[in-house]
Length: 56
Image (cartoon, rainbow, N blue to C red; front, side, top):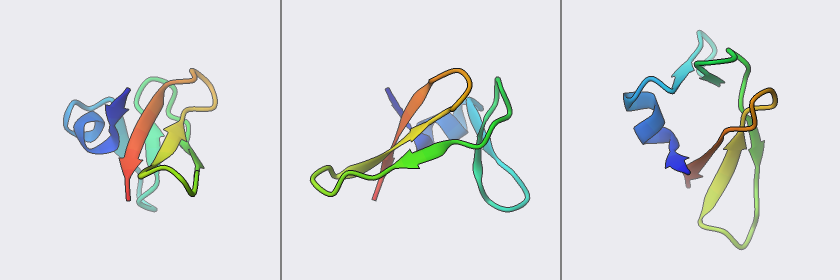
């Protein structure tokens, strides 16, 4: 599981004009899952299921 920063550098995800993170393969907006006990949020592509860590 990559972090969102590394995925942005590797062009696996990109930001659209509204600064939302999108999957480069599917071009779908990543969904965010927040767990209060975790140090990071989990971002998941709804179409292909790829997951990324987003540090808070």
